[in-house]
Image (cartoon, rainbow, N blue to C red; front, side, top):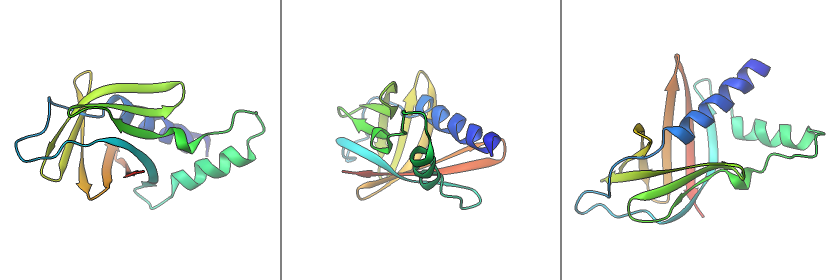
Length: 138
C-alpha cells in the first residue's frame, strides 16, 4: 500500500515536471485560459486515486489534510501555465495547442494530452504503469 501510494505521488510530481511545451498554439487553435481542476485520477487497473487521496486526507491525523482544491493547472497566458500540486509545490511551463491536442513542457520535459470541451486528459506512463488524469475548467 505504501509502495503504491509512493508510485502515485512520484507520477504526480513527474507530471508537474513534465507538463507543457512550445510558444503558443498553431494558427486556428484557441489559447486556453483559467484554472482546470483535477477531477479524476485513475491508474491502469481502474483504481480511483483521487478518491483514495480524499479518504487518506480524511483519516490522516497529522493536522495537514490533503487539499484537493490545490491540484490544478492554471493557464496564465496564451502559451504559459502553472501546474499546482499543493500550495507549496508548483511548476511553471509553456504549452501549445494543435486542434484538440495539447503539449505541456517544463524545463524541456514534455507531456501530451487531449482537450475535449472544458476537459483536458493527460495519460502518464512510467515503468509499465499508467495514470490518467482529467482536469476540468472551473
